[in-house]
Length: 238
Image (cartoon, rainbow, N blue to C red; front, side, top):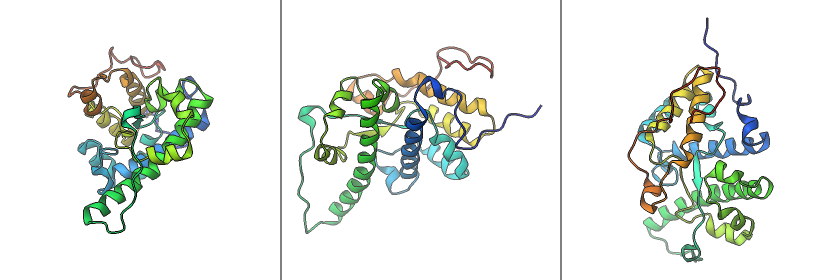
């Protein structure tokens, strides 16, 4: 009997109804496309905002666009958002008219961050206002950040959009998970892709809150907490 083929990118993920509605998932997938485009770009991919494990980058570069689309259609964002504490708020900075080469590079990086950060903040804010608690799952925000998102003014968002700690790749301490997602997206079995999505959900609560570990992640293998069930089992594997 032939294996079931992966759906086209617009096909609904079977677990969709358990998490976020189709409009929210559409916006998350679109953000994920932007995130992957930056992560796979040789210039932007070295930025800590978009820096994926090298093996994952190589794999996603070599696969067809349809495979990258399947990876982007994860039910949650492939990156996390964090809001600064009051004493970490980024200051206003006047642009220099006599930039050095290093300043030109920094400005180009900041513009890439700002364009991505503004869109991500807008989607996260709309989600926090309309579907309480969902932004914690969708973007990894802290519980206290949802109210703060709603209070952001346009100028706050513009200033915050280049704050160095705003964005980072999801699952920072689980390079094996990124490999799992890339291989599942490149494969031909729908259940493998669903399993990868579900395993990512299982790892959401497994990142320690220590500032250093939370930013760079522990060096350990991602592994679901119980054995895999049959392919027909729709339960999340944790």
